[in-house]
Image 1: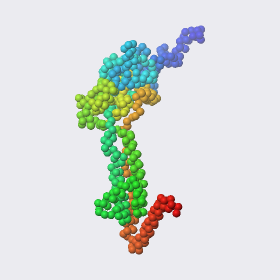
Image 2: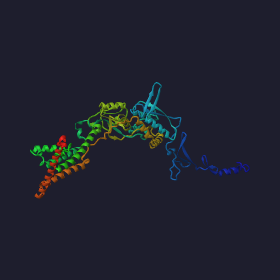
Image 3: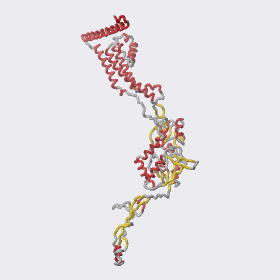
Image 4: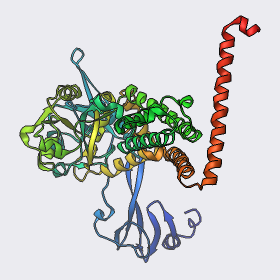
Length: 518
């Protein structure tokens, strides 16, 4: 204007028409006396104190998500997706189930004296952390709902609530009325049953340390070693001769006595002594291991589930339990085939536990998140049994097509990946954690022959070698060798008799001081 003040308006008009720059509203350029029609604007979604870039609008082309040469254009803004418009003036009404059995997830505390209602639990804390991760400000109020979970989900469909926070399981029938976030807990349904002692029948407990094959092998080795000793010693000891019954009982006596005493002074042959020394060494190891294993079984009691399958429940026509107001009764009937009259509903964890202890029900079916809480609290009397039936897990509820749902899902992912979700769950379970957890799989297994095979080979091989030497010396030596062998054995016997005679004399002399002095 200052430059063209003296040159007149025509000069100013020409300067304006030749303008070509980018202003706040886009490109400033004129075609003739009109603004050039080619303009492109970026569209942002303002959310509270932040914003989200959602696309572009080009004059003559329409809306697009990008400015790429191959980008697709549309005349409708719907091409850019949902536009979120939460503001501080709109407060969400969030329903919370007040009849939750597992208060650790959602607990509605009503103070009637001050007319105040507070909300606590894992789901409440998780939703608070989720809202903090959203890229926009979101305000909300909790409202207690005293009804079934299906009715609570329908309240979102009826627009009485904008969302639901609590231990609400994701099942297909509820998708007719609302949408769910991704599950924030483990998924599945499990069966919890009482435990019984594996050693309840203690009549044959002493047989538990070893397997049946191990006991049979021990008896075989005992009889075999007894036979070898009897075979070698029968020509040297008159007690081993006589009727067959007498010889048999004597052989058995030798076999079993070798478990507790070497009896070396009563054996006459060095062959039988060698066989017994090795067997006594093996028997000592076996008896010590047996004693330790049996003591462990007596001190540490082992447990197992009273019921291990759905089929066993059906065969026994057993009564089972589930949470009142949940989807489980319908699922047990339709999916698992349990009769409706065999299903009982309960209002608390304590009623579940008492019914199981009093044998009013044989099993209780719980979602995996609820089973974690129940077993953490009652770990000494109950255990999870059978397979895990895949179901949806717990999730937050929103109206179908809610623009908040994508952002909440992304926030839940961020919380899970950062470890915050794990920390919240561990903190919840820590208050209920039981120190003496029953593990039905942690049992003392019976020992098999594989653990002692080297020892059995050692004693069996030694006894067999002694027996073969004895048979060879007695039956397969020619007369000259037999005479030399007999002479050698006679010298050994004479030396042994002289040794015993000398020892006896020393013993008698030691008894009398006078003889000893002499």
